[in-house]
Image (cartoon, rainbow, N blue to C red; front, side, top):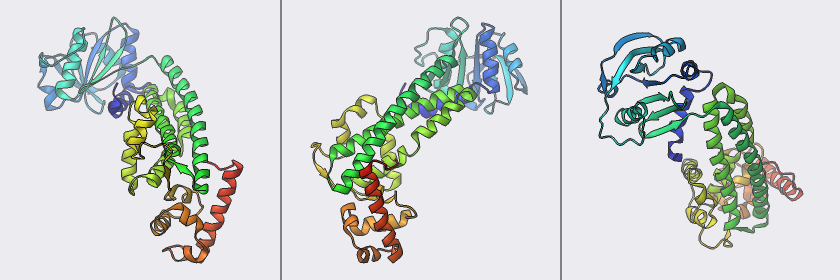
Length: 356
């Protein structure tokens, strides 16, 4: 499965997740050892491949879906899943469309999905599995118990990576106060962030596919991942070769998290991707956005003014009250607050009590 298809798969599995009326109907068919071919959305492209069948236009009900599945043809549902439009429909997509499926029902579903972009659901009578097709994307639903096991295992992995990320982020903060940051220090923090966001994407799919049964997993994931993306964005904006807006940093981080694990774990490739140069020991200078964001009651606008005025965190740290006061939006009281805030943060970092 390509990570570029994650959003598409999430949309599909949410429609058929446990707890939804459609999933109830699909499970009824599975438990009766039946098969079915179901089409969502009767647009012009979809209607063009219909042959025969009869109109119904009745309210959707799981029991109705089960009874209609006993006929040979496909069942057509409205895009909002509120109506059953047709039943016993013969689908005739272009036979020249490439299909890797062997069964007639699944081959028809794959070709129809590629031809129309509609969501098609194929239930295998022999294998008792549900396959989803939309455009070129295919996803086979897994048994909820197996999914729950995978989700819990991924959560345990997330906990370990989060601890590592927190340790590396604290170390980076300490090095920034000491003005001793290297390209490798930045690379390792962003590498851990990319791993965490990649695992989050995987667990998000499990949660979506588990539906109502995955709610607790979703809550745990939210608690574990909280703050990672924002931290990584600020690291990117502090060390990018040229100043990045939040939007551009967000795009770059999303691109990084979407890469294969081989790329993410390759520190040499990662350093090139981040434009940090080939030398892992090359010294870098922080702009200071990440550390300043930790100070209480310091607006983003003022942080931007400080970074633009001084150019680096080392200069901000060395500035006296008069120099800080000259920055737009600071003033004498805020200048004192910045100095005392940085002092307290430095002490927390050295004592190992800084919260990420």
